[in-house]
Amino acid sequence: MNKWLGVAALAAALGVAMPAQAAPVTSWNYEISFRFTDASFTPGVGDPIHQQFELSWGESGGDFGVPNGTRSALTIGTGPDNHTGGGTVSGTVVTNALSVPGIGLSNTITHWNNEISNLYATLRSGQITSSLTLETSEGVPVVGLPDLTFDFLFVETLNDPPGNPGCADNTPEPCADIFVLVSATSFNVPFTHEGIEYLISIFPYTAGGLLGSIATLGPEQCAAAGAAPNCVGIVTDEDAVTTIQFAFAITTQPLLVPEPDMLGLLALGLFGVAGVRRTRRAR
Image (cartoon, rainbow, N blue to C red; front, side, top):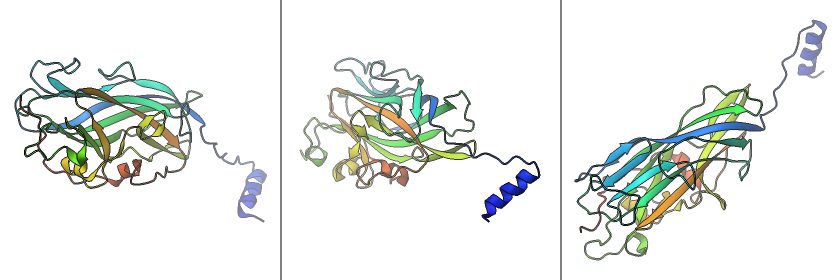
């Protein structure tokens, strides 16, 4: 006789109830919010700002949200119509779903890219932390969820490089700025609910799929950011506003993502960080 069946028969004879194996939760209600929890800036003049939902740099008292603004910034928002001020995003996420509507949409990160003098202190690195609350579709809360974090490097590039070497990887002038994701504890992060282990993964996303505009950058772009080759990030055009939408998934098995082009790189830990001065053309 199968050992488990023998135990079950003995328990039945003794009037002992056997524990039931819970089925995986199929959908969850969530609330999620991002905040900047760390930042560093290069030496220089001006008034760098590090707040929960804003990292900005450039002219003191200037504005990054207007054409030809005298500051640049990274900001946290909640969606296409709200790029600043942070906030909580809520909705429903389906277990083991990797496309809309099953994934959970999260916050956005927006880069306000304005041309500023190379005399100003500029952003060089930072950390984003995401706090998540979950409950089952029946309203049972999940306790003990960890915060999810990811670090990044940032390069405020020089628009007119000395000696006219051109922009990194032969991209057009004025040179794009570079945002590099360098580490994460936000991919396949485990939590347990009613005896079943689930995994949370957070990632950039567009309607086209995982990663969105995030991609493997060229070797000169990675080097400019002080990152190892095949780094993952985005280049943002001068005098433009670029928004990255984030989303997350809950799975019962680890997500396996092709490397180096996709988010598997985010789980590899910190790349080397070099002190690279981020400057622009003096005006």
